[in-house]
Structures are given as structure tokens and as C-alpha cells.
Amino acid sequence: MSLVICANKEIDGTTSRQASSIAEPWAFRNALTSTFKIPANAQVALQSCKVNVGGQVVVSHATNTFYQYFGTLLDNDGSTAPQLDDTIYHPMQVRILGDDVKLGDVKEFSSPDFANQVASRLNETIYHPNLKEKVTCEVQRNASSLDFLGYTIGFDQSVANVSGAHATAVNHFDKLTDVDRSGDGVFSYAPGTGMFQRNPSLDGTCCAIFPDEPLSLSKGIFEVNLSGAHADVNKNKSEVPWAVGLSRYMNNIAGATTQNYYPSYYDVSADASLGYWTSDVTQELLPYFDFGVGRNEEGDLVCFQTSFDTDKDYSTKVEIEYWNNSNSDFSAATGRVSANTYTDVRFVADGETLKAEISANNGSDWSIICEYVADDAKTAMFGPIHQACWCLHPVLCIGETASDANSRMVLSRLDSPSLTDYDVEEKFGAGWWETMELLGTERLCRDVETRDVLIPGDATVYAQQTTNASGYFSTLSNVLIMNENEIYSPSHGANAGNVLGFNSTIVPQPANPDTVFPRLYNSEFAPDVQSSQAMFVRLDNFGQNVLNAIESGPGGGGRRSKIISHLPRFDNNQSTGRLYFEPKNFVWIDLDNPSELNVNDFSLSFCYSNEQYARVLTGQSIVCLYFRAKPKETM
Image 1 (cartoon, one colour):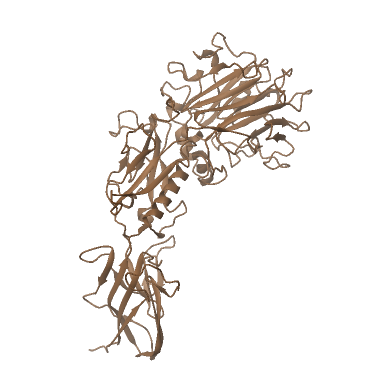
Image 2 (cartoon, helix red, strand yellow):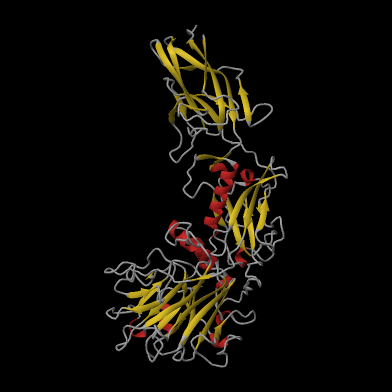
């Protein structure tokens, strides 16, 4: 029997890492100055092992997922209102390693790097335009800054609005065969003046959506000039139909014939009831709007939104009866009024509420078309800005008549939060709808839109929430969902409580007052900076035949391996630092060498069950091996 002692070159206490890839604590090679002979039909066993487990956070599929929620705080008894169906919100999944994490993936972080990773994923999955890029996660320590206490997650909000030239306008109406989405041949747009003009050679309507920034929901204003130096759509053109409004961004087209940009559960059949292009509704439809105002072919001022029709099982445009709105300046009317004398139209978003106004005097005074009034009928005002349309973008639409084919309007104002990394065409780059659509899970948005509180004809009342005087969404709560919960559901697979330091299944209240921003959520205990993953020793350059049958990936187990022993992740006293392991009973593994081996080096490594390096190791690793000739079998 022979004893072989192997180690990487680094010694305990050394602060710098070796540059050589053959001397890492988790993978190293010891070259020999003379040949070492191993007899034929030999066996190997682990005699002992010493490693240093660093204070790193190790995240795997088993600790990767939690959820966040921003909206009305729910009652925890599961029956008293408000419950989730009484709101316009939905839990949002956070995967610490990213949405493409696979079963068996493992990654190690230092505590600060882990905090940064959590903050990044929270910002990507918060989706609300005034909360994106405002979430932080920091390492929490005691007053001496020595003892690790966990993490502090902070939720802040953007309340300062930015208004500027919006550079990009893209086609929002349909996927035409002869143009791309840039709108070439459909319209022109000049960012300097904000002038949007219909191409006179186009046969039909033109419509653009502006994807660069979303409307701020903290008292943000979106304004369009209809008649002025660069606008004439409503100036001595009483027959030109137009519409302006707000919409979520559509990446995919729907409909086998019209090829329109709208949700798969949307129907266009209600457009004609608004008085638009009734002569040829199959060719001249309105584009998709979540909220809109316009002048129809009859010269009427129409106001509308998209809502779900539960009887027909699709969403569609629904007219807002603004003349029945108590605060409307047109409440004395018995129906639609003429739109012909107006120069400007605007929308004002305040929390969950949206107000539409119109001006006949170049914006020097405004008349309310409709706004939220608690006691009014749901059909007389816009419904609340729900989670599926948190990120609202300007939509401008111009029709034509025989004599007017090149009308213009101007996007004169759009207040947005200050965002540096906003992209409607990237997963997690914009709102909840945009990401769910790209992920193929827009059914979750449909689930929200079908709730009774959002159906105009349903008697269920919803109290729309505004921001406070400073512009903060103070009546809406941030909630962390660390483990699966029946109240904040779905929360499938939530399992990150231990790695983030939370015992509670849900964390609904911050450590500081709920009305103080940022809201701070502190770990309830100091999580172990260690891996719960099993760790193994491999002898990489010999011929032992080992089967790793652990199902650690989509293809399951059954892979060939060089593992020779399983190491516990703790000894009797500690789980990090210097750990020593010496098995009481040796497990001898055949090397399957029919003849003597002349060995010039030993290659060893430490891995997890998925054969990924255990990079949590630091300092010096020592492995002692026994080699022997295989005992002869006795009768």
C-alpha cells in the first residue's frame, strides 16, 4: 500500500490567488520529479482531505427563486378583502441567477457581489417605470463593520419627471409586407419639433408608437398639439379622423389576415361602434390603445379604453361615456360633443389614475374630458392603470379623406422617469407585459385583465390610488415573497429565504416606516455564507470507472465521472474556514489498469454533484490518497 500526498501550491493565509490554472484550490496538478509506479489491477481510496471553505454565497436551483409584489397589501387570512383578485396586481418572479437558469447550475458569489446580483435582478423584474433602477441590495454589518448580519433591500421611487425629444417612432398598426416597423412609407417623424406627419401616398391610416421611454405614473403628462405651427390635423379639417393615446408596446403580431400588433386575446370588432372608418372596417381599423381620445369620421370627440369582455372572452375597445363623468367639463351634454375646435389634447397619470383633457386655446387652458371620480360609474372614466399596462407609450394615429392625405400633429410633451437601460424589445428591459409577451407567458397578463375590478360593466368597485403630494406611491406596498405562499400566488418554486436571510414566507412591511423612501427590508437572520451543495473529490487523470447518476440537468444523470469520494460540507465544529475530513471506512475504487502504471503527475479537483468546480474553496487544499494492489478474491 502506498500513500500519496497532493496539494495546490498555495498555503493557508496567503491573500493572493495563484495565477496558474493548475494550482487553484478547487483544481490542481502535482507534477513529479520521478516516475511513480502503481501496480497492475490497483485500487485507490481517499485517506484524508483538508480544504478551506471561503465565506461565499453559493446559489443553485434550490436557492434561486423568490417573488416581489408591488401593489395593494393583501389580507393574510385568505378571505377578507383585499385578496389578489380584488387588486390589479400580480406577483413577479425573481430568479437570482437569471431567467435561463438550468437545473444543476451553481454559482458562487462574495457577499457584496451577491448583493449586487440580487439588486440587478430585482430592478429587472420590478417592471413599474417609477421603480425600475431604484432597487438596491447592500451587505448589512454591525456597528463595527465586522460581523455579517445579512442584507438590506431598499425600494425607492422616481418622482422627478424628465421631458425631452423622443427620437424613435415605429409602426404600431400592422406588419405590412412592403415596409418594416420603422414606418418608412407610412409616416415621417421629426424628433426636433416632435412633428408626426402622414405619408400622402399611403392608402389607409398611419399609426406610430414611441418606444424609447414610458410615461411616468408619478403625475406624468403626455401632450399632443393638433393645430399649430407644425400641426394641422384638427385645423380646418373637420373630416380627418385622428386618435391619440397610450399603449403598452407589442413585439409580436396577432391575426392571420390583418397582422396587427395587439395581444392574442384582443378583438378589433368594436372599433366601428366608435365611429371610425365605418365604410371599410376590415381595412381601416384603429390600432391598439390601452387608453385613447380622438375625433371620429363624424367629427365627434370620442374617448375609449381597452377592457376585457368576459362574455365574449376577449379584450376590446370600450367607449368612455365622459358626459356622465361628474368632473367632466362636458357633463351637461347628453352624448358625444364636437371635436372640431380643439388645438391640444393631453393625459395626466397620477398613480393608478389617468385623466384626459383637451384645450381649445393652444394649451393655455384645459377642459377635463374624464377623470377618476370614486362615486361615478365605471363606464364614465378610465379604469385604473393595471400591472399589464404599467409602461405606457404615446400612440399617434392619423386617417385620411379624399382631400386631406398629409395631415400632421406634434408630440409636444412626454414626462418620463429617468431610465438609463430601458428597452421594450428585450426581456426584463421594460414593463411586465413586454417581458411576459417575449417569454410567451402573456396569459398572466390576461389573468389580471379579466378580474372583475377591471370590467366596466361589472358592479365590483375598485378605489383607484393616487400618489401623495411628493409624487410617491405611498398607498401601495412592496412585498417580498421568499417561499411559496397561498395569499400571494402564484409563487411557484420560491425558495430563496435561507440564502437571503428571511425566516418569514412573506415580508410585507419594511424595517423603517412604510411611508419613508427608500423602504428598507433587512434580513431576519445572518444567512450562512456557505453552500448547501454536496462536494466531491475527483482524481482526474486515472481510469477509474465511476457513474454519476444524480439528475442535475435536463438530461438527467448517467454521466461518467472521476469522483472518488464524497465530502461533508462541515466538520464537528464549523462549516466554513479550514475543514478536515478523514473517512472511518475506506472505499476502494478499481483503477481498471491491467498493467503497471508509470505516473508522472496527479490531477485532482473538487466539484458539486453536477461536476461543476467548487470554486468556493480558497487557500490550500490537501488530498491524501492510498493506492494498493487489488486483493485476490478468496473462496
